[in-house]
Length: 318
Ligand code: UDP
Ligand code: MG
Image (cartoon, rainbow, N blue to C red; front, side, top):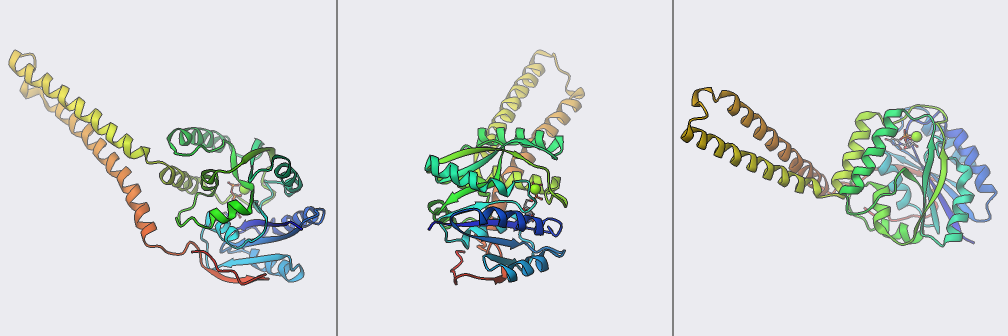
């Protein structure tokens, strides 16, 4: 019989976790394959942990991975993937924005297409701010222009992956994981599945603007070296502007159409312009150096405090 793991990252989700479990259970019970659910408690500060422990106590198919602190959404999903040894895994948010009732459809789509990945594309998104929709649209379009791999638009981490993808994913050594990008990067057969994304069932989004920006910069700097090239292009522009200005002033001096004493404005403009370009390019370099700094330390991506219902002793890939 084929096996399936559902991976659910949870951070301060006390308001939704019980309903999430109930709806997942109802869906999984209707399937003909063997299934388990891995909840990752990503250092929640509310009652999420105690609710999940209670669920794991009464249902042995529920595995709870409890982090020592909050390591972030991507680390939580990574831990889930590292711990699943089933034929398929489905990554889903705890807040029920991605309806668990779609799981049979995803499996059916995989079967029909014989795909390795079924990624879910949002046809519509209720309950998201206009700013979030607009900014994410522009961001993904630009990211696709800059990145080495193409990212499907309007997708999140909600997707089905098979054991081939899980196996390849477990070979990734980078710590700063942008999971949807990495899965696209792996290749094999990846097919879309269109769905209506619902509004958050309860609770608040864990992605305020600041976190959204850092998530976006991870995608950009981990998947593209083009910002470095753009820094060089900017440098070229600056040099050309500098040369033109030099000619202008030298000839101006010779032919007397500029007045040296009144040069204050042009000097200030040149200083500000070139200074700006220098800071910008140093900033771009700094981003990559920062990533190198983080990666070279080789710290673990997450620390597990305990695993409830640990099915087998699994060696966690670092
Ligand atoms: N999440 C997590 N750790 C974090 C932030 C979020 O495990 O540090 C989980 C969260 O509980 C949810 C999922 O990641 O299941 C997506 O978060 P959220 O719904 O807040 O993001 P949004 O849908 O607003 O982009
Ligand atoms: Mg959400």
